[in-house]
Length: 480
Image 1 (cartoon, rainbow, N blue to C red):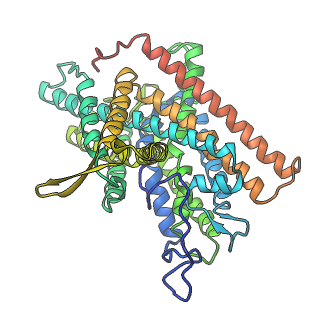
Image 2: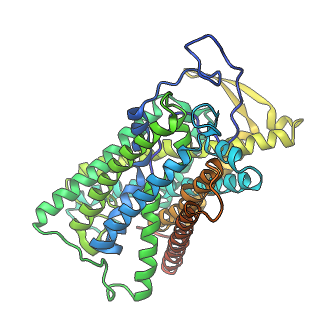
Image 3: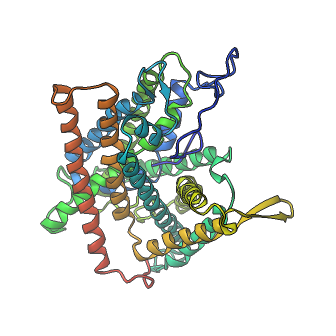
């Protein structure tokens, strides 16, 4: 999952603006005219989807094998495409051309479902964002450790085991995030999306290139039809790992949370839903081809020994400087990605605190500080304390559970069914007034039920992976 957001990602209701009539500069809702097209929307989706999730695809393919691995990727791509078209149909409430526009995912849920389901949606979103912060902390520290180890291997000629403790790197990442979290509207810096896109394509491309190079060097394609053999792992481990692989693949495809916001950049006519249907097809097809190449080339290169993280598992030792560039790109990408994803959670807590304690100076007062060469900085004590505690919490949890694959699988499971399938299906049924027990209603509910089973299996596999890893891992004392 990548990080590029076209606008501020917020889960609260957008304020309606008074209509501006008689001007070509404004849209039907009084906001500035949108200029997005099929191609800009496709670009947004592709750059948003392709991210750190690509690093675990070779491992996921190894658990499932040459038959089930690509088949599962195709299955997830189809489900993601189909449910995205359902979600895009809910951009406007009522009429698809003239209905009221929903600016965020939660706006769409509120307009179509309302009530308690909005709170459930918000809870799942914020839980997912909290998990993403932990996942990004782990991934960044692993990449920093990988740079240190690759240079150690190179300087020792491969003679040293080069054990490196990951905890100091997690702490360093946490300190950086504490500083960045105090920058107001960090996620809206215009260059952030460009940097994120360049970095994600850099490390994904390097991973793919190294995989192709290793397959060519080996002169053979490794792997088997069924993946890791029972014997190398126990029958129970095989089942749990296969389930976890489903979560890893689901995580790589997830972008439903920002689909509505991307759609809100698209001009009309034609209706935004028609444009997004085409954009979704182009972007999901492109992403699937890329994922197939990365996952399959990684598996072909390493076979059943494919590492959990393609660029840090040390299947690639040389050229060491290229591996270093890829891992530095991951760190740069995730430092910004962390902030982009947690901003809505920060905003929600701070807004709730301000509403519940309107007279509190601790919450509302801004202290203006002049910083040389930077300018005026607004220091808010509540923001300082709360955001610092949040980053410390995610860092400590990451140090206790530094398992990239397990966490990615769990995140994929947590977000897949509720956000990618359940809410889009339920909103579409309401939007299109599909009669209960009709053929279409039954088909949609069957799809939702099947995806719920996949989510439960993926979550169970990832939790089993965490429990298994904890048996041999000692928190705060580990060295990789």
